[in-house]
Length: 88
Image 1 (cartoon, rainbow, N blue to C red):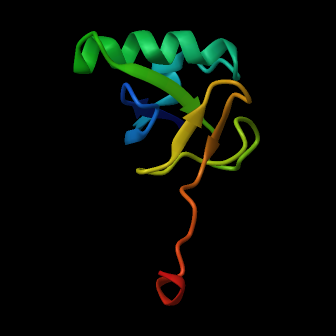
Image 2: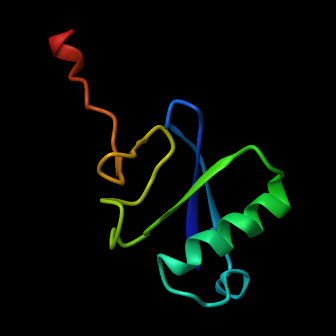
Image 3: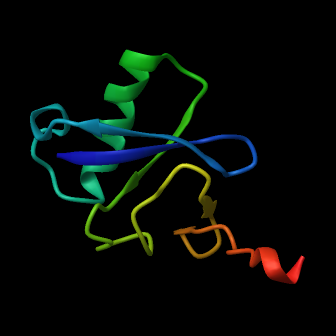
């Protein structure tokens, strides 16, 4: 299985979708990304930005979660900062 993060115009992760290996032609990353994006576009329509993410954190820093940010400069997903409610 391959995992893809839909990121919005602010580079925030909006959704994470799972794609079968057969739908990415069993290709490894990074070759699988373009094939997966084409598949997801056929399913969800155009106009969405998809980035492949690694469930094991093997690439792009970490597995993307909803609310994370994609940092294009470092090509990584970044978790939002943890806010300590006692410090507010």
